[in-house]
Length: 100
Image 1 (cartoon, rainbow, N blue to C red):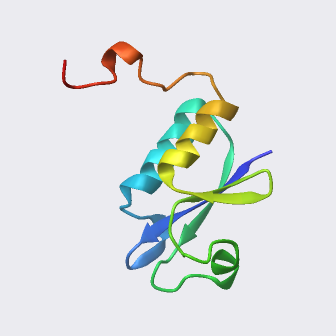
Image 2 (cartoon, rainbow, N blue to C red):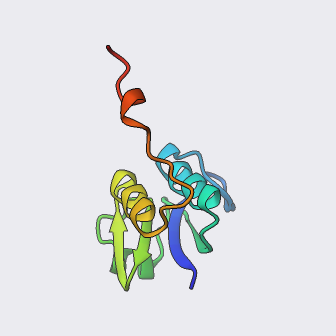
């Protein structure tokens, strides 16, 4: 079953993906793990009623997991990694810090 994903649409053209790095991070994670998803492009200047009903804050990205919409790209990517562990996109501990 495909996940539902709501992300920012491009300013001036709501049929194109917008420039939000948080949305792009979520989409790249889904693509890399080959997780099927249904994309909803959200025009942030004219948010649809259904979107505000499931996400009153109106922020993107949001993904629907098990009938619950989840926001925050860090949380979303963590859930995707947990539910779809292969291929792992977790940074190995020996590389997780820039400072030594």
